[in-house]
Image 1 (cartoon, one colour):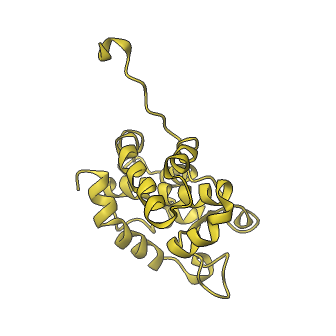
Image 2 (cartoon, helix red, strand yellow):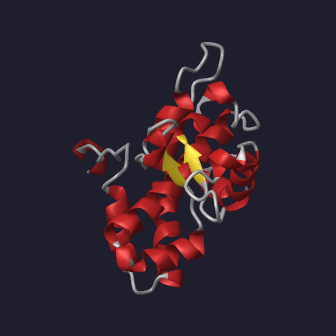
Length: 184
């Protein structure tokens, strides 16, 4: 695996399904215990201590975190900024909700940037440290393409570029502008 695009288009769906297969139903469907149509990810399920991501190597964990961030982010952005279209979006995607831990925190949706904090929480000194920033910045153009393309194909009533701008406003890492001496 060498880049985010390859990972996102070839392995992410399989990896997220495998991840969910390790989580008990009462946590996996925490917000939808009756119908079991809406998946939930509680913060603690992403922490190294619980080991739900141990099937991934370091690089795949980094790509998984970025892909999961994009997934949760687009769901959050659609709900917050394009609410008239959210029902259609939700039915098309069935994206998971990222929530706090029980007791109490499980009633709150967390910002997707907390995915990165959860995945690096209390890493043992012997574990390889997950580095998201550089891979995240490298993945921005792919994330933009995937997001805008999804809107164009499946939600044509939503301006994909505008949707993407709302997503960018929530990024945990920013692209650095090229210094003037590099552009001349």
